[in-house]
Image (cartoon, rainbow, N blue to C red; front, side, top):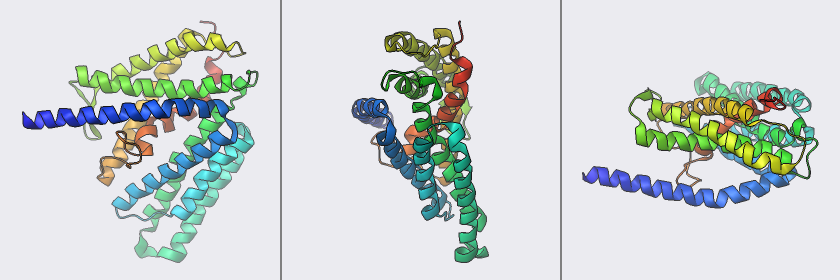
Length: 301
């Protein structure tokens, strides 16, 4: 019984810290997304720097030694170039060049600084993986904010809607899975990867994202009065896909932490852990939302 009470108390303490972080972070995030432009790009670049540092920390926990002096500049360039380019076609060519230089640069560094005894393959692989996993995905926060579908927007609001839609639907699904799993969870989803996650929690996450996406669209999109056309039904279907991919992103980070033998990727966010612990699902859902939006916008159902 004592252990049960201690666990309950710790869970309540973590939940309280999560709520406190959210109470501060959400309003600041909304203002930042509305502002867009370089303020958003710089903050996302900082998050990318913290995120790839956490990836490298997990790699080092396994005894591998990636090259942060290559990886960190690469993720910053990927994010900031998204602001300069403004669209995926304009961004993608330079992005490929950054990935190529980062991967080959890490390999050259392994040749001249590590040698065969320095685990060159894990070092190069972890460096390139971190660049793609963090920088290549978070750049879509900037790209989504300036998505071509929002070109007709009144100052700030349509681009704000698109990015906040992706973030809100992702995190609503995460919260729904958390509470649904605690209330109804019985069957383990993938115990070898994440022992706490359940099938019932996963279903709750899917339903939470669908309902949240539909409600978010029905309540906010008409108030914008711009050119975006996203029906409630289309929003719910998009929310379902976002939630499914978000759960894969969550499990992917759990897999990395399990291999590294760590509970959290970092400690920068009280109650949440590290940047990756909070943004693991978002790394998957931002590119997905950007890619799927043209298919769902304008559907008349």
